[in-house]
Length: 265
View 1: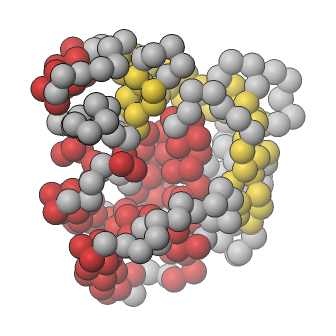
View 2: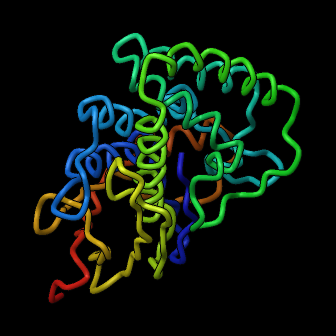
């Protein structure tokens, strides 16, 4: 769950599934005269769309931190045995449908605890310090599971696609994570499977319009609809009250327009 405490006192809550749906939309429209279309196309769209499926169990029962009185955002949720099991299930589940997509999701998860395997220079990776033993065991076991699957595919293509998945994730997080958008940059962004890449700037314009340079999509402008809940109550007695308010709050839609930097907006 992406949780934002807003300046007006409300709480915006966005599920990881809804965040990932934006990533899937970006993947589905990726490709034009500057950017090569993802391949295998269906598998990469599927991986982007379900890359955070491991959060679905937690998001059916969002919790309250009794020490802070707040509901934690995804980076603050404890990686206990149940959550680690859910992360592993997500890769296995998608892999049973599409082995390539499942491999991408599993690699995404193990990479997040290791600075996205160093493939993204900007924005800087989160420094996590020494990883707890349970996470080290999880990484080791799941990286071993990934090896025989990865051996059946082209290593260079896998590396490019892992990089692409991180880019789609980061563009979506840019949209979802803050109340006020600011200039940002993602680098490197693959242009093709031949090794070419570029830095991409994200610049907010009027309202919820975002200019991307270079622009990667196959339509003149890409409209995204983000589903979220806005809780007007921001203090809760306990988890039960938080969940009651959350589930009784109607979902809303926040629309964004992604456009080329040359567009007149």
